[in-house]
Length: 407
Ligand SMILES: Cc1cc2nc3c(=O)[nH]c(=O)nc-3n(C[C@H](O)[C@H](O)[C@H](O)COP(=O)(O)OP(=O)(O)OC[C@H]3O[C@@H](n4cnc5c(N)ncnc54)[C@H](O)[C@@H]3O)c2cc1C
Image 1 (cartoon, rainbow, N blue to C red):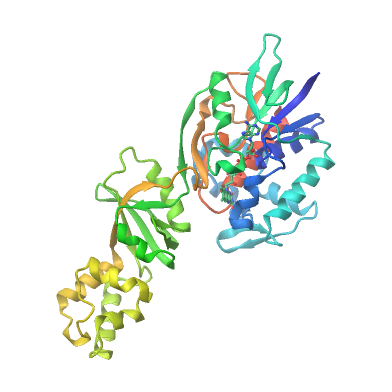
Image 2 (cartoon, rainbow, N blue to C red; image 1 turned 90 degrees about the vertical axis):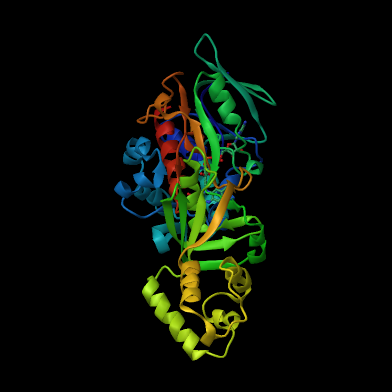
């Protein structure tokens, strides 16, 4: 038996591709190696699922690596279309800080249950626990898909096997192998949206400290190449948190990242002069207290020892003994606390993969391969990745919709 369309991978891209193809009258078989759909989706947004972003669609493109490729797909299925898909079918959404869109129930599980219901409504046939190990196009133009359990035949195939981060969710890079064997180029996959290993081993003393409203900058060759405001978290290996995740995307672009510095501004809301006045005020109010104690008004207590050590300042000097020179050192520590980049965390912990199917081999209007007619791509398997804020799921849903419509 030859299936009309086989979709491989039941993540958001494959699910939306299946629904969209079924809406266009196709009989669809959706295969996944897992025991149910959307394993990575369940983890999205720390279990709350940041589905998309409510900024105007024109502002989306520069949030991505290779964002221009998405223009046509987003004109066919935008963030508004995605929100409408959920809301008009009864799943309420809400918009939070940064225009991020979440289900009102704050539960990824509800999104997965909803999508499963949609697949059933559209009579998409599901086959789980079925790992694809090979795809070939036969002489007669029919695809032969070999799985661990069977050989399946199809007129068209949509490959939506994701990237290779969080491999325990099922996306371990299998799709790259099939794509390469079918004659495509795979741009080298690298982990992005991940934490940063730092060279300073003492950083583990700050493990667990989370700071909101700071600025983190990446400096290469003396130039600022990336800067993010927001929250950062110190870890046993270095630094992570939302502001740092986005910076990891900038670092991934650098061919030789050794020598990169990470600079933190702990007080980005005030300039150096205002900070100096604040320090002068603190030192005169607390003239008989030690610097170590005065610092408690300015930083979390468990950071103070290492912070002062970085400036070779003694915590025991009194407020009225602090010299102009020492005050300048403190200002520099607050505004430009410099740490040394070692490496990015790996695929096990990264949120998305940069790299994947080379985009000039894919038609952006249909998601069809330019090399193998009848083969389509959707989602993270493509060489596209976005910032945090719902951009990656939107890309998966939009490219899935377009692939399904055209397959
Ligand atoms: C912890 C975490 C949190 C995230 N939070 C967000 C967020 O809040 N917002 C956001 O926009 N993005 C988020 N992302 C990113 C987003 O989840 C992914 O970009 C998105 O899931 C990609 O969708 P996809 O369908 O292309 O691939 P995936 O979701 O990875 O799905 C691929 C599917 O293919 C299947 N598969 C792979 N190989 C085979 C094979 N050989 N045979 C059969 N099946 C196979 C896998 O089992 C999997 O089910 C998060 C990612 C992580 C890891």
